[in-house]
Image (tube, rainbow, N blue to C red; front, side, top):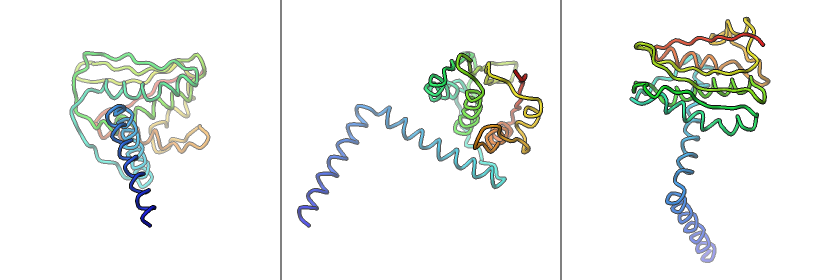
Length: 194
């Protein structure tokens, strides 16, 4: 028991040293892992709420929408590269600060960009745009992919949405619509098959 206790203490001390070193030298890695874990938890809650017919309440803060867009592009850049798709952004630097829920907006836009990547082929492009039009702030996800039929487009952000992806549920676009609605925004889709 004494040997085992000493061994446990040595292991505990080694773990504490490793964590301290990680925080000191590679804090960005730890922050990224924690942020990703938080987003997964929030996304799971949004999906569960959507299945139950509930709407996740907003946690509003003041910030820059471009920061959310840049984070999504950074987080999906590797997936895009693996698919041979060029992922980028065209962000209006004059976009003023606004009040929004960064977690929910991240999840909604991530879903749209991820869906766009899934509808593209090697050599295609996906990008995020931001713009100011009068008193409206505009965020767009644009892609050069295959487009969608009018039948799919017409129900995309409604309860009648169905997924065309294997294993998809159609809940993602419903969640996106709910996030936009709770932010008192509008969502539109323009697409042409082919």
